[in-house]
Length: 82
Image 1 (cartoon, rainbow, N blue to C red):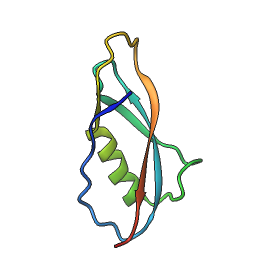
Image 2 (image 1 turned 180 degrees about the vertical axis):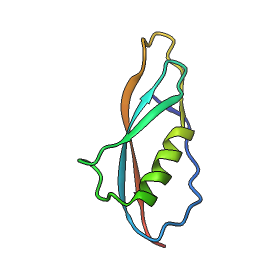
Image 3 (image 1 turned 120 degrees about the vertical axis):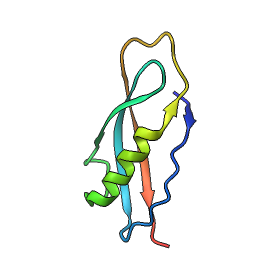
Image 4 (image 1 turned 30 degrees about the horizontal axis):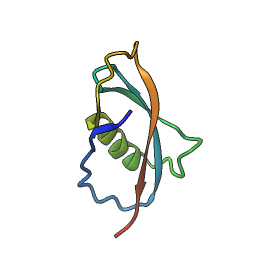
């Protein structure tokens, strides 16, 4: 599915790392739930995970009226120090 509204992340974390979130999207394009994919992430830092989770839940995707139930996908967030 194509993302309709990308998240805006204004947080300035004090650590770097990659957080991969498994996401579930309903037929209307709303992210209904998330879970960190620890196997694909490079960090378990809870500050980064919280930021990524919030950003994933704020994202929306284009609706798919043909979809039945939720569809699972992933979103990757790379945090770099500036």
